[in-house]
Every structure is written in C-alpha cells, then in structure tokens.
Amino acid sequence: RTPLNGIIGYLQLVINELYDTPEEAREFLLGAQQSAEHLLTIINDVLDIARIEAGKMRLQPGETSIVAVLDQVQRLVRVQADEAGLQVEYQPVDDELTAWCDEERLRQVLLNLIGNAVKFTPAGGRVAVGVQRRDEEGDVRFEIRDTGIGISPDKLEAIFCKFVQADGSTTRRRGGSGLGLTISRHLVELMGGALGGDSDGEGKGSVFFFTVPLHRGGEGRIPTSDGNAAPVEGHGRNRPLALVVEDDPLYRDYLCGLLEQHGFVTTWAATADDALLVLKEHVPRIVTIDYSLPARESARLNTGWDLLVELQRDERLAHTVTVIVTGDGEVLLRRLETERLPSGIEVISKLDVPAELPGAIERALPGGPDGRHSRILVADDDPHFRLVLGRLLEDRGHELLWAKDGEECLRLLEVAADTIDLLLLDLRMPTINGYEVLERLHQLGSALPVLIVTAFPEPETIEERMMLSGGGLTRLLTKHEVLSDPGRFCELIEHSINSDGQD
Ligand code: ADP
Image (cartoon, rainbow, N blue to C red; front, side, top):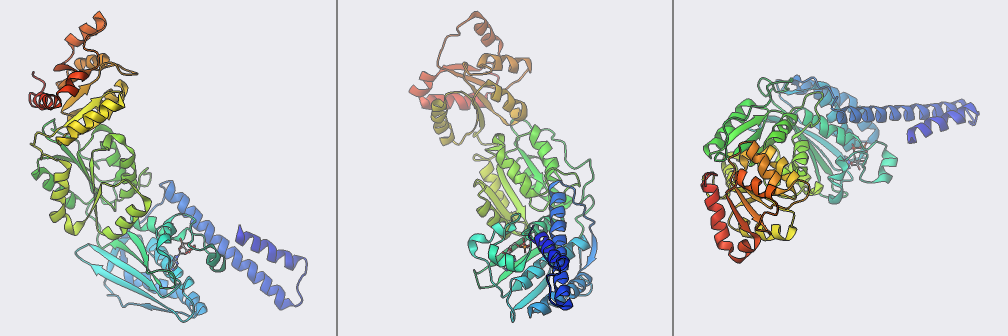
C-alpha cells in the first residue's frame, strides 16, 4: 500500500493547494506519477506470482538471440544506472549465440537481476554482466556481479521467498516488492534452467547466476497431454522398479539403460505431474529426478523440486532412494540445506552420473537385485514389537514397510504389492484385522508369502479358524517364539521369501 499512500498524499497536497510555486506543484505531481509507476510494477509482479502459482504462466520458448536481448536490457538499464552513478559492464557476446527460451521472460529475469545489482550498489561501484556458452552442460550461463551492499549468509536463501527482503529499511529507501527473485527463479525453472545467488557477506558485493538451455531438448520438450509416461511392464517380485523422471528422451534412455544393467525394470515420466501418476500406482526402489523439468500449462507440479517435496510427504516412499540429477548441483544443495528437507536425497550433477549413479543404485539395493535382502511389509499395531522387529530385520539388510493397522496394510498392498517380498501379519489389529487381510489376499489370488506373528496362538472363533485355513498362509508364529529365538525367526523369514509362497 506504500505507493498508493504516496499517490493519495501527493494528490491531496495539489488538490488542497498546499504548494508555494507552480514548480513545487509539478514536483508533487511527479511524485504521484513515480509512486503510480512503482505500484504498477508491484501489481505486475503479484499477477506473475498468481499466474505461476495457479500453473497458468504461459511461456513461448523459441530460438532467442542473446545479443539482441542484452542490447535491449542495456538500453533499459542505462537511465537507472546513470542516476545511481554506476557503471554496468557487459561482457562481449558472440553475435550468433542463441538459447532456447522465452525472449520476453529472459529479458524480465535479466532486468530484475541487473536492476537489483544497480539498486543495491552505492554510487561509484561496479556491476558486471557475464555470459558463457557451456556446451557440455548444454546451457548458457548468465552471471551478474556487483560490488554493492552484499547479503549476509543467513539471508541468502530467504530472499528467494515471496515478499522477503533482506533488510526492510534499505527496501523502504530503495523500493521493490520482494517478489522479483521468486518470480525470476520460477521463470528460469519453467524455461528449463536454474537460478541462484551468492555473496561473501554484507558490504562485500553479490553475484546472481542462472542458466537457460542452449537447445530445444528434442521433440516433446514441452509436453502436450499424452504419452509422457511409460507403462510399467514386466516387473515382479524379483525385478525391482526404477522410475526415471526426465524430459530429454536421449538422456532418459541412457539412465534407463544404466539402471537396467543393474537389474532394474525401468519406467519413466517426462513431467513431475506424470511422475506423480506413476507413483500413485507403484512404489519404486529408486527414483531419479531431473531438477529442471518442463511443465504443462495446467500442471499441478511444475518443477523437479515440487516433485521432490511431494515424494518426501508420501510415507509409502520412505524407503525409496531419491536421486536428483541436475546441471547445477551447487544451487540445489544450498536449497536442500536451507529448506531442511529430510536427508537421504542424493544430488548428482549430470557430468558425474556415470561415476556416481552406480553407487546410488547400490544403496537402493543393499544386497543387489539378486541378493537375499528383501522388502518386508510389517502390519502390526504394537509400536514396541515393531521396534524390535525393525532392529532384527534391518540389521540383516532387509527393508521394512510399516502398516499400523489392517486398513493401511491393504492400502500398501494395493499400491506396492509387486515390490513386497513378504508380509508379516499380526492378527488382532484395529480397523481391519489380520483375518480379513488374509481373506482379501486369498480373494485376489495373491501368491505373496505371509508369516503370521501373533500374541495369541489360538484362533478365537470358528470363523477365524476357517479364515486361517483358507488364506494363503505360510506359517504362524507367536510373538513369544520370535523373541525367544530371533535367529531362527530370521532364517524362517528368508526361507519364506525364497520359497516364493509355495511352502
Ligand atoms: P525486491 O528487489 O523487489 O525487494 P527481490 O526479490 O528482487 O525483491 O529481492 C529480494 C531482496 O534480496 C532484496 O530486497 C534485497 O534485500 C536482496 N537483494 C537482491 N539482489 C541484491 C543484490 N544484488 N545485492 C544485495 N541485496 C540484494
């Protein structure tokens, strides 16, 4: 509301003739005009943010001449820089250099970053704009360096958040909405790049950098509606599933090939939204995510980051190894640190994939795809017993999924049955009890081995007894038996898994 108050205030002065000379009246009107222009930029920013958040930001990517964009930016910034008593230096750029992006949005990002550098650098300082074509990364990298007021390390990531300004007092002097960097980061990510900033501290200048892709990423880079995810075929209990989220078909084939060499069945998705659809149906052991994903206009999730946040929220995926593949690992690592996502997310730069991805794959499969280590679903409402089981089985390299009652157990079986090797089932649980779970498995014709672990060895009623004889039961153990001879229990588990439900 600050600029609006300015407009009203100046107009009041003029309307009430509170000026001494016509020149002074003109000055008040100019003040009102400046405030109005400021208000216009804020409104434009707010509209941009609203569009981005609603997934309605429309980009028009195309072959964009970098020299042409920089020329326009230079002209637009000159007045502001002259007023501030600053030199802005532009590194010479090859006339032929082009990038694959939305020209207007590229100009907007550059104007925002260079405008900030000018705004936050005192007279006599220097602002330098560098451009680098990086063939190996397949992008063009822009860098805007200034000798201005700098940013303290604890504020560095926060300034990318909506409406945040490092220091309210400087902003009141220098204007702005605190939206520019947020918008710029979103725009750059929508164009398939990444944006970050750095500073050695207050008073020590700042540097902001971002990338845009050099080339169009093959057909379907900005996907339409169909054909952006592969069907999952042919993976059973013995072939673990890997999901590759990557829009570039060549790179996707490469990653899928690498994972298949390690014994995975692979599937892929080209956008974060499509990946979410795959994840609704399946629980992969490993997911690789390209950080810079394109999004459809109506997308719910726009970027690799959005997908990552979604993955972290889904408890079914607690044991899924997440690997982010990115062109600019540094920006991402800082973001992971400051936004405190749970650890366990691996970040691998595209250049390091051949050397580092196999290690991540090994971690996804403690015993290798053919090893005896397995994924076991434990359905038991007793947290203490679950803790003991966890210790016993995880120590032997097995991976555990938990269900705190029968309902959750059935839900997990529905979405993840083909990645589960064994069900450890308690009989008396809230919501749906173990007998009903068995009956359901039986109806489905499931071959999943089940080991019943119960505190009460005897079925209580005739119906319970009938259900037990009808279900796909492998063995029944009492909790007392488990606790008194854990070694035998573990052997039994491994035997049940290997006998593949035939026992
Ligand atoms: P605005 O500039 O409209 O306040 P931005 O999102 O562009 O919003 O920037 C957010 C904050 O980041 C600024 O208020 C300022 O505190 C800090 N900032 C941005 N660029 C620089 C820079 N080059 N030097 C110092 N601080 C900066």
